[in-house]
Image 1 (cartoon, rainbow, N blue to C red):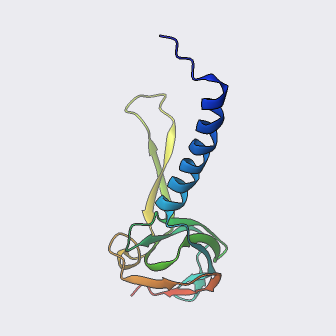
Image 2 (tube, one colour):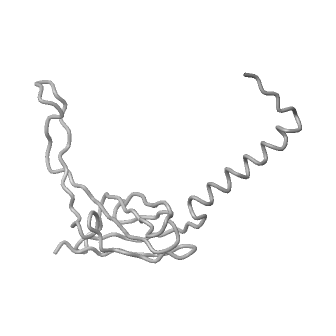
Image 3 (cartoon, one colour):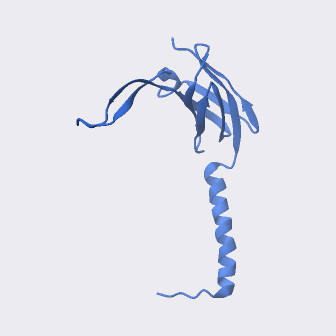
Amino acid sequence: MNVNLGTRSVGRVVPLLGLLTLTLAVGCSGGKEAVVQGKVTLDGVPVQKGTIRFVSTGKAAPGGGEINAGQYSVKVPVGEVKVEITAPQVVGKRKAYDTPDSPLIDVTKESIPEQYNTKTTLTFKVGPGTNPKDFDLKSK
């Protein structure tokens, strides 16, 4: 099937498609993001490598990123968020398959207590602009 929209029709459709795409992109994200940055420590020691996620209690998409040498800086949705922090540690190796020539893969264990990740109790109110926020986590 061959459809000829003509030059005038295409000239009207292309800008409308662009406007629709922009509207959807802004509408889905809420259009409001801010930067949250700070330090993450566990029992006073900087978390060397991990991830931090900010999950909106509304409809906005979550934001997050890496923790390196206890520092993080991420773009997240503005509003009330739940915070999830993980830092898996390699505790050994195991075979990937039950074969003699199987490669070895890392065995990891979460070093951060579950009340800060899978069962997080951490919340934060993100405002516009840059938000400083340090997390001093306790293992006990």
